[in-house]
Image 1 (spheres, rainbow, N blue to C red):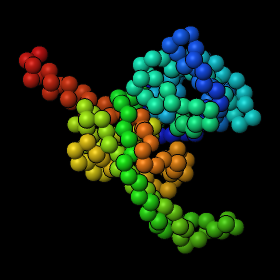
Image 2: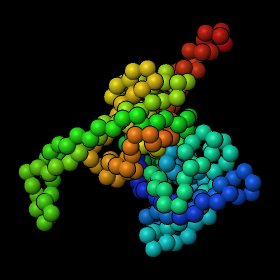
Image 3: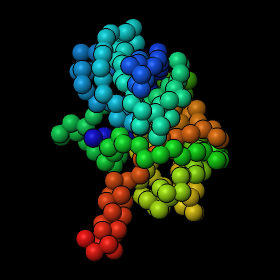
Image 4: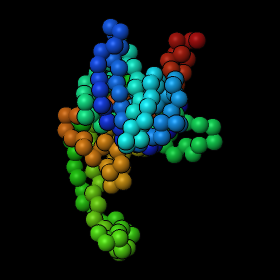
Amino acid sequence: MFTGIVTDVGEIAAAENFQGTLRRLRIISHYDPATIAIGASIACGGPCLTVVAVGPHERGAWFEVDAAAETLALTTVGGWTIGTRVNLERSLKIGDELGGHIVTGHVDGIATIIAREDITAVVEGGESGGGERDTGAWGATARFDIRAPKPLAAFIAAKGSVALDGCSLTVNHVEGDVFSILLIPHTLEVTTWGERGVGDPLNLEVDLMARYAARLAEARGAGY
């Protein structure tokens, strides 16, 4: 279980087919290798993947995960190559702050960015290049319009939550199968969103509560 609050951005260091249907990925991160256990779950760009090997690296740690056939079919993992950067989140512990929303790491499908608009704004209380506090510093927000797979569009609501590439985000507007999100400068800086542009695919996980509400309505309609 996760919250959609990214704690590191990892980089794919190796990607190769393994035992026929699996794809083994080696990911470099800033995590302490002593804190990563074999069998641990880490959300990598959205999908929850299991650690099968780990070791120290000059940046922190490397760890390896195996992606199975369904993960490769339903997510962007199959397209990851050496150098691809991915949002990382460690699994939630009892007592941790739930800063985003409940995220399972089970991707529902692939969404696509159809528009990006960057908006320059003044961020109060910034720092100058010399480290002094300024009365304001220039930052940029970004508005993204995203097209969801049609079967998933009904699960997305304005002011609701979605997980995109492992990030918990609030939906601003919905029209048909297109919805928009607005990202603050911090999110653009500490995740892969700063690199995202038109045409990029995104791992989409709809809100768990919306999924259960739809199933409940379906069951009642069928007389269960």
